[in-house]
Length: 199
Image (cartoon, rainbow, N blue to C red; front, top):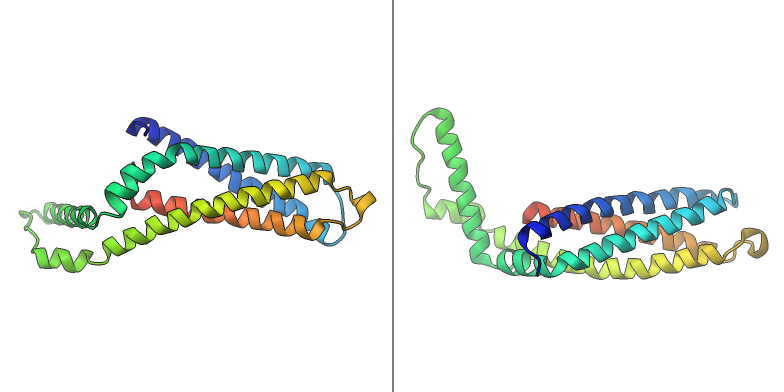
């Protein structure tokens, strides 16, 4: 398991590379789009974007694998799947909000009634559990997207439109679009997870 500071910096780097992978897979789809209409322009550039997109995707996946054990221990097990920790955190946030409100109006902060805190935070543990489950689902999709994207890249590198005609074009288009969709899904779920709780 990584130290907290190392994990934070790796998480930031992972986020930057993942954003670049999302941009590259999206750009790859845009460059492939003329192929759908039978215009095979910029074949070499499209292959180059496939290599760039999958290099970034693979790098982001490897970065995620480095950070994952620390995430599992410090975020998922210690917080997201611990109802007590989630409720304690929600109570502390509500009390802090009360202190800010009291300071703004120039009065002493009230101690919040436990029943009010419980009513306000009763859905928090369930929401945290959902985030943890979505994150685990994301990991499986990222692995499938990696295999699909690499297969698409290899097919695109081997395919010559002049020699093969449409050949593997349906697979290439579907593979690139699916890889792009998975990279977007992974980025959104990753952001939701870190917005809920980070290291």
